[in-house]
Amino acid sequence: MNANSNQSASSEELISSQALIKRDADSVAGTIYRYTDIAFQRGDGVYLYDFEGHRYLDFVSGIATMNVGHCHPQVVDAIRDQAQTLIHGASHVGYLEPYVDLVEALKATAPGDLQSGKAILVNSGSEAVETAIKLARFVTNRPMILAFTDSFHGRSMGALSMTASSTLFRQRLSSLLPGVHHTPYPYCFRCPLKYASPEECDLACVNLVEKALTSVVPPDDLAGIIVEPIAGEGGYIVPPEGFLFALREICDRTGALLIADEVQTGLGRTGKMFAVEHGGIEPDIICLAKALGGGLPLGAALAKSELMDKWPPAAQGTTFGGNPVACRAGLASLEIIQQQELMPHAVEVGEFIQKRFMAAQKEFPMIGDIRGTGLMIGVELVNPDGSPADEIIKAIIKEMGSKGIVLTKCGASAIRIAPPLIISKEQAAEGVDIILSVIGNHQWE
Image (tube, rainbow, N blue to C red):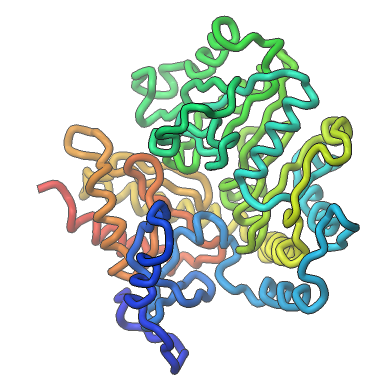
């Protein structure tokens, strides 16, 4: 697909992309990093459009957020209807029907005892994580949290204390939340313990958790273990079978709570409503955001009722969390995912994409690893010596934008593939063709 070949239906171009980019440079903080040089004007389904009308296939869906695509008619109608009824009321001031509707619908999709659990709605993934950590410490009356390297749980100071996917996020911020200890996430392609395969290691990363409980983290002080069922920003890393089950067993044995950060994995992205379902386990708390709001800011912490009921009124709160408009957008998105059977579709298209890249590895040895579940796929690029191609991937991502596809990276050098769940196999093939052509342009000389 040529990015210059498709013009939008709009007949009036009020500003140019370059003019907007210039205004942005003059006014917006430089700490907002941009993966592409594209200025987006509108979105429709699996496509984004710039101010000149050029069309781009969206392979990252607002960072795993637009699960039902851009401007889905049902979502737009829900937003419009609610905006004409009540935009904001604040859940602390009174009771809001969209808030209750969304929580009830969310609970109905949850695993096990969480179906009879309770939730608090917030504004973002970071806030959902902060809420979960506060709840775990409060109800257990314990001070410590165990997290993992290669994890990303947010950028606010508490959530950042759990985040360990890049030192950049922590630079000059030594005074983070105390009582957080990290052990290695099972990143099998780059095993931190140098094992050749998951079969050889026998879940050695779990042994390091056990070691921490005898040397650094007193079990009676452990409030919870927080884990991404698939590590997102760390590189779309899928843990080996049995890892999540082992963490569940450790929490059961120590009295700690298992917190699943499903901010990026949740709501159908992996082919199941929640990624923990692939591991056959039930967490005590689930953190959600991104796709939950259908494109509007919304997060949630869903926990077992016996935990939430121990939290007294006003111990946690938010002004905008559970905003009626965001709740209606989220409820519409959840209905679309279920009614249109987008989860099995995500599995089918995701397997198709992975097979395409696996076949291409023979021609392009720069492709070091392909991993993922459903439509959450990482394609890791490597240098000739096997090290992460962390420099070349920046140029590759930028070039893909000029070829008509929007992508970002994750981890040191993995192409992040997370398109809307509505993507067709034909659209997926078109996107993979573009990616492989750009990789071919940068293949080792």
